[in-house]
Image (cartoon, rainbow, N blue to C red):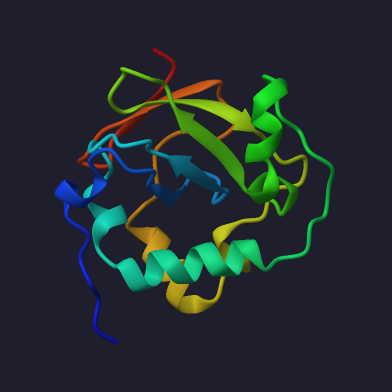
Length: 146
């Protein structure tokens, strides 16, 4: 299957969601909100990114909303209600994300179909999801806090 690479120019000023796995195999959705400091591996295949979106969006909801910050974050909980962590970009802070929804029972990459499992192998961050803040660089390195 051919893969359409997403360019950083396409990310400027638009909402762009990407996914990654953590050191324990849990999956998170990251909302970049126009930030171009997205890991290169997240841009490797528009088709696989879309397939992962669809896979998560069509999973049954297994838990109620859990938005740590409350309020407006409730609208960001659909992936969380299906088992994914959700991080949103901190405005004016390139590469910095804050946790907006946390599943009580997260799914892992092992639950994904094989082609999506292999897609996330290149998007595994050396952090543990559930941290309040994560900084992620374009080269795929990540650290908690800051």
